[in-house]
Length: 305
Image 1 (cartoon, rainbow, N blue to C red):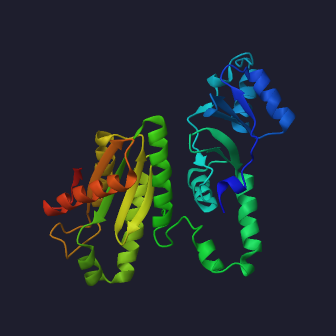
Image 2: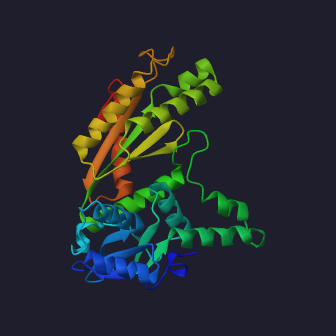
Image 3: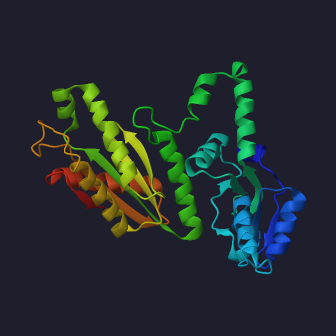
């Protein structure tokens, strides 16, 4: 199922010079949970119910002004999907980033619709209702999973979807983003020494530590085995290196014994790469090469690509 099959084709839109009073009135008349702000048919902002609630709280406190322009309160650069995006990819994006509204663009990046959380939930419910009629229905539903069941971080499928949307957003808005690929040092030896159950426990602790160390805007995924990828939107090489280095130090500070490692405790090696408007596949490959440089030069270190 494609996004264009379930989107609202006539979303509520206003221009940048629309007043807040007029915008709120439009939302109330249409009973809409959001409105899109457009310039030359391209979405440049979004105003949601949460923004309106904040606005009225300011008005009641004597600090708000409904004569201001909508561009003063809108959320800029809304996360968008294309009309040919798959439903399950839009659902993953909505859930992972906690978004209730996704503007839909055509191949020219022009606005053609809006997908809401309600649209996605309704489509998902329809898929569940019809699962007995679908071939490989269990596999279809499994693909909607975002989370690695062991580490409780994003799985490989969720990673690829999020990277693709981050790449598109970077290209559309001329942004830089970064990735860090991390690998636990001598982990095979850890499993051989302590057993796979203890290895799984260590992986869970490491994943939890990484999540607690990165920014709230960063996203963490299981790349494969004991490898973990951090996606850092709007980060350059220097800030991404600092983030990865904080993670490396936090894992070392756990002081998890590792008798099979010359470092004696569980540690991470990592590679970092960042580009403006970069293609995510090339960016991950670049970080992978940097990771292997870290491994080849003593481990327990971060190398930039």
